[in-house]
Image 1 (cartoon, rainbow, N blue to C red):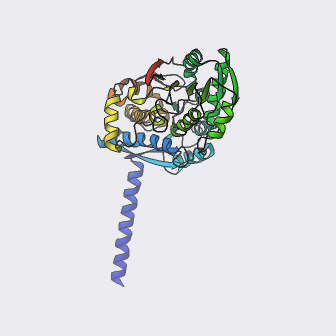
Image 2: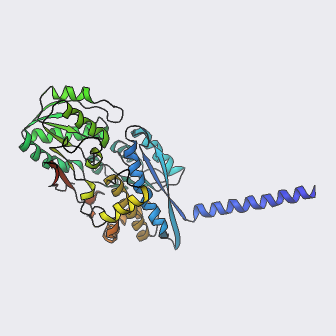
Image 3: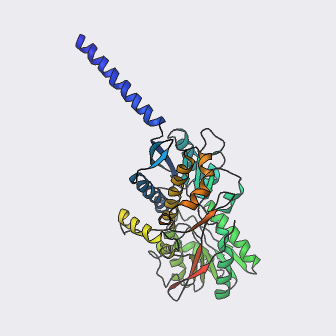
Length: 391
């Protein structure tokens, strides 16, 4: 009986000690949780995984170099990822869970529908959290949300250079065959207006869900029946390549305006360079002009191999994670408001090796001022096209 009592007491002491250790680790700031909600299944899974890889890569580098110092204590980062299947309601639910259950004071989301849904509560709820929004949707900047950092250039900055180049080369009739996500619809509507304002006509909208569709021939056939000179395409890269390939197979000789979500280097894995002739889109990642582009590509290939090419989704989220770590150090805090206030200073001091694309600052509305460059395929080569910054 005495032995059982001693064993019970010993067990109680051990449990109490373990509980104390757990409480100390949880409240000391030794581990900073970074939340991520994105599409990790379905048609956009590759896109979601790219963003996740960028965050993982940065976190591993930061932790490997000793983490950050907050309140005189060394802290490391951990990433908690949840699949939202590219659905805004799921993204909102995931973000709330990450903040309330996992203690994430920093959450990343890579699609406009999810970002806009999360912006409805991230600075109002308890606890608050800083949102890293990887979407080029301009509407993000009009919400007045003080705890959202928009990462990539706004997509409306591409409208003028795309329109000018394609109209001059191919003609003024545009057909719409873009993805029907919230991002895709907004992009199509904006480009439709810009095209018409430049004197063009829009033959019809035959958008299709790039995340669930596998055969795009029907939508392409309908679009081509109107005899357009140019097609607006875009969404996840591989489906975009399939749309371009389908159009070429059906005899289309015109040009393509490619939304910024689609990336040439990944479209190349589906459609040949000859098939993308006359396509304008974001310049291939390997041709980015940031001081850290070569170190990043080398580090990415070393960590993940060469079976999947690095791209801007990976790189810009990697860069932003390093930027958050820099801002946390400068704020000497993980408080979202304090960290957001230090983002401009962090931009100035962020080492060039962490900038695959050069950052020139951050706007008052919370937008990273990243240099953007487009390219058009001409005679089998990518010809750079300057893109003016728009806020």
